[in-house]
Image (cartoon, rainbow, N blue to C red; front, side, top):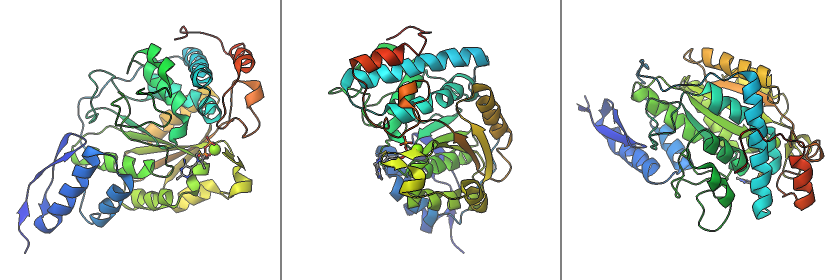
Length: 349
Ligand SMILES: Cc1ncc(C[n+]2csc(CCOP(=O)(O)OP(=O)(O)O)c2C)c(N)n1
Ligand SMILES: [Mg+2]
């Protein structure tokens, strides 16, 4: 009979109490310490898999952070400003990724201004008692930064530093700069689901009943680590997780179907054991409804997946209907044309 101990583990700054046989203790201490100091998703995920035979406690209710109730028309107005922020950031430094960012502007607006229970202040990495969001397709950082700034995580005027030397707003988000709202480095595709699963498991261990959200590109799904994580999340009933795929059918080199077809994506996620919803990610009312539906489906033994149809470049006519604007910046005239199509609703930075 193995001796059983009750160690205090440290995960993203949270104290985790769990009954663990001593033979596994060292493995967990190593895992969580690495996760704490610098995000190492692959290693963490591997170690989570190694320890996956351990039973998980059921989540219980904790004090919730507030989620805002914002009308659909107001959300649309915010999304318009987010789109302006995107094209202005990318134009300002003549680099970055406007296409996917524009396509996901409605999603980020719905998430940060209506769906998630989160408080920008006081900010800490733990996010205990809050919903968490992990951006896995980190190249669409302009939309992430705009949503964070506009919802109060850091000054809106800091958007002007995007991709500049010494900025906290790196082209691909990092934790190193300490930008409030960023809990994981991303840009190397395929890793965010593994990290989010770790965070979702930590919430269960901490009896924190809040939800972990993720976003992934459809091209990103070509990464094998996604499917390893997908299998793990369903197999271990990580049911406090809502993932979304930006299903725009495009990626850096062309249409996803031409680069590596995804086949019947819904059937694949269902086969992997997920509860799958589909929505139009550029129709605010439909999107808010789908995200609300997804919330009601948590806690039922399955991770939840939203396949979200979007249009790359949505909102700027000459950036739509192609992959061309995946990662190039508008020139001065193109910026003017783009801004002419996007109402300034909250004031430019
Ligand atoms: C591991 C890894 N491989 C390749 C890349 C290069 N890359 C950056 S974005 C991208 C396309 C991803 O497609 P998708 O996720 O659909 O994003 P979208 O073009 O729709 O914004 C690729 C291949 C990367 N960032 N990471
Ligand atoms: Mg794509």
